[in-house]
Image (cartoon, rainbow, N blue to C red):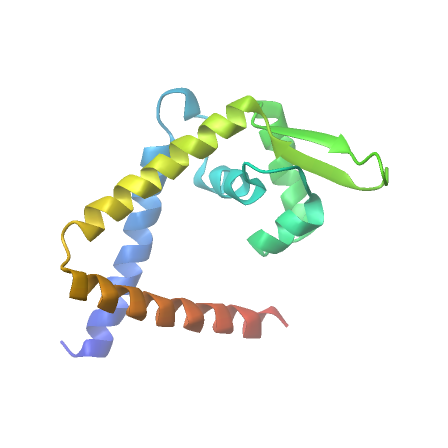
Length: 150
């Protein structure tokens, strides 16, 4: 098998298995009602101050309408709080509830364990090569995503 075929196969497999593992890791115990998509919204909202819907939608590269559907679900589940801005009542601000903060930390611990498991198997040189390769891969995907938006 040539390098292009190998890379294609590995990237497709990696994408699928990371999604499966992440979904399984997230949906445990008290977080059985959270999907991977929900968790990405929770992650984008973050632990800091409340954010407006437009900025979170931009982070996720979705429309505000799509985000509204996800946020409505997360509000019902108790993970997200939604309020109108005092400065401009047209602006909706979203933040994580206490339950949402716990879910965020739960997801963060999954990522920490994943990265630790990968790094501990690599030499310092292999870590640097992996970082450089993934940085280039990310740049490619970001550039491709930007081109396909229009």
